[in-house]
Image (cartoon, rainbow, N blue to C red):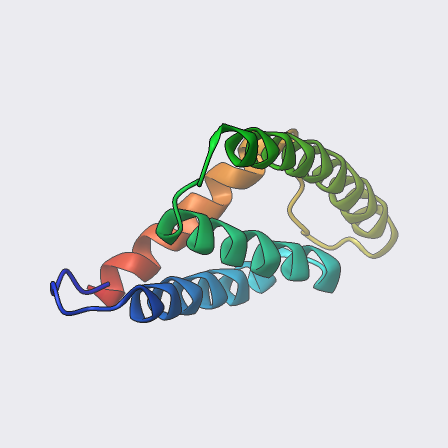
Length: 122
């Protein structure tokens, strides 16, 4: 992302969206389903927009906190479901699909994948 003072918020958003897109695509190699990939895209767009557009007031901030908590709960359940199906399919066909014990483990994997991508983009 450019630190150029002439850089517009739109350019910054586009750069963040590009990184989010590439990160989500990298996750496909880790057994991420289409639905989870869509959630990653959606959450990445929301995070990029939130980073550029500051909260207008406390009510909006509270709404964002509530939405973040809801997204966290949804991620927790999604990770449980993905891991459950990965174990079932691994048992069925002897595959080596990744499973995660918690949303935190999944996020750590996401960060591990994103770090080399971000370094390459710099």
